[in-house]
View (tube, rainbow, N blue to C red):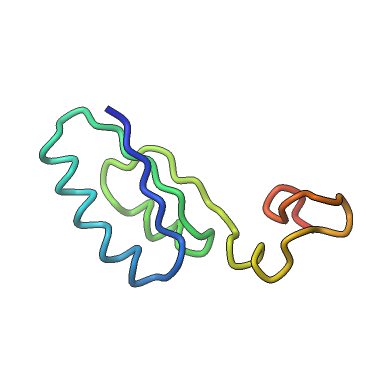
Length: 81
């Protein structure tokens, strides 16, 4: 089974979700847990034992500047402008 955790909004949300992920892994052996998280919180999530992929996202940056000038209609996390 594969599970994707999407917690982007705040550090508190990420911290409070971490024990739930550990409980999930303990209850379902063999589960693969991946996590989409704000780039700044990725190092914290990587300390969570047994994590699969950690997918950093720059949602806060994207909210401030949803479309880059260098490549129209492209979210900022892909073009790094």
